[in-house]
Length: 292
Image (cartoon, rainbow, N blue to C red; front, side, top):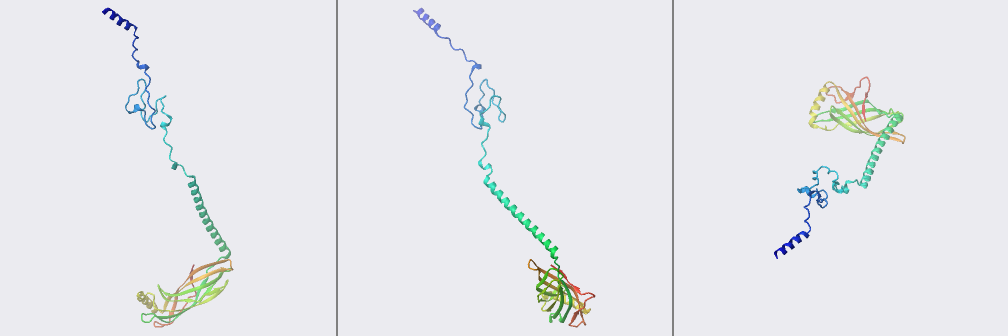
């Protein structure tokens, strides 16, 4: 009985298929990994060893090994935002604004150039000249300068000549002053008058002294005037502000304010206590300086 069971076991062993050979390392299929996420390395970059038979993953920052390229989108960054691109509407608005400013600047330059050119042409054609002021006579009566008695009646005749050949001169308003040093002794207004081309006219000026403008400074002025008066001659000055219009027919007009200075007019007193004095011109009459 025992022999029959042993025979059956030996027959079953003989008929069973042989066991499969052990797997070879060189025939193992490559491990399958999910596709890498955008911007992240493959799974074996997180500490897992590469599969047997495959080269290790490249170091971050270096290109991949030949034949082992990552997916197409792995090395492309996201597109820049829409604000990165220029807005055509803003560009056109800035272009229109810049063109408008350039147009204004160009117009101003042309205007200045035209005005300058017209002034040059007018000067060449008309050749305007400033009127000439000449002091013919100058005197003072009842002259007394002191804090208790401050008086003086001034009288002057000034000839004004228009030297222009094509321009009329109209002196519309004339303000006159009598000065001693830096102090004004009298002030008044002269009558306006008109000067035709190459004509002259005499301007009569009358002024009356009143209280001094600066009583605190008048003591020094009185002392200086007294010292000059002891010599018999005192120098005074006539000064004018004249609002004037130059005109050539009806096509050209220019208004200016002339400042006239007739300085160092010597008035001779008959004696130290005399109250009257008369202008004593030198060899030539006094020609005044005129500023415009």
